[in-house]
Amino acid sequence: MSNSFKAFVACSLVMAFSVAASFGQSSHYDVNNMDTKASACTDFYQYANGGWLAANPIPPAYPAWGLANILNEKNRDVLQPNGPDERVQKEILRLYKDSPECSILFELMTDFDEGLQEWRYRHVKLVERTIGAKKGTGGSPGVPFLKESLFRPVFHDLWAIRHEM
Image (cartoon, rainbow, N blue to C red; front, side, top):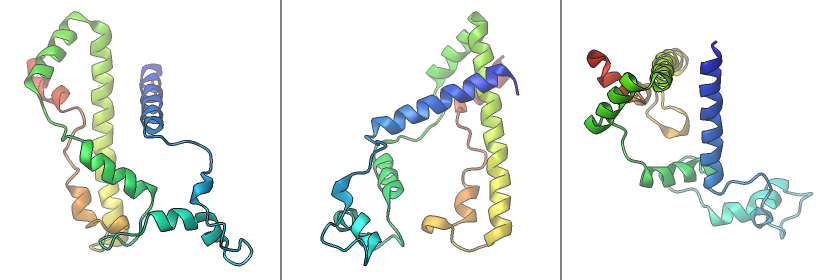
């Protein structure tokens, strides 16, 4: 694995942790999530989580509910679909021609995207082999849901300009 790719992955992880921090996640335990009326010796789960469970009941449409579900719901409200944009493509082409450093970064991003698409395919086949047509974890449709992610690049614009380089 090249040093440039390692640097790209490291920067990506830093960005991911920064995004997580911006959602107000912290490393301490929030005592408001506790139910101090419950006995820790009799029902420790209720004691440790009762406050959170009372404030966050499981919605009827879900088999389970947790912080990941809440974050997913919040993201669904603010995220926009990622798709190609001709203005972005023109700028990327300009940078490919004028800035060798950027062209190296763009190629690393394309490599990363290709690797992610390959991983998605292998993941679909693993899940298909493991659970077949059963529902997926978290109540998703399973394999059909995962198949929708195939051939969906993260960096659409980098793929859209390949023929113009």
